[in-house]
Amino acid sequence: MDRLALILVIIGALNWGLIGLFQFDLVASLFGGQNALLSRAVYTLVGIAGAYCISLLFRERTAEKE
Image 1 (cartoon, rainbow, N blue to C red):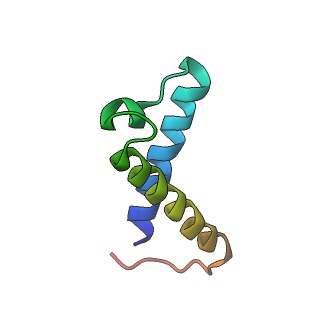
Image 2 (tube, rainbow, N blue to C red; image 1 turned 90 degrees about the horizontal axis):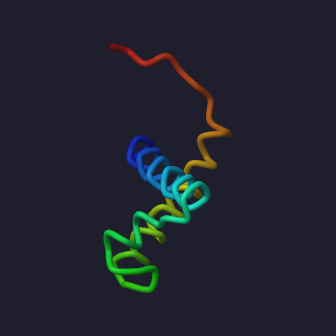
């Protein structure tokens, strides 16, 4: 779940970078505009993933076994 949330947050961050630098919303262009149902679903999932990632700040880190 952590990795999925981080992937979605990275997608959101890259999209915001494109908006800031080039005024280009990749999600909207791929899924039919900002008001399209699929675009709104992606924005919602990215937002939920961002909220979930807040919990990563407060977790104890343990060494992973390989």
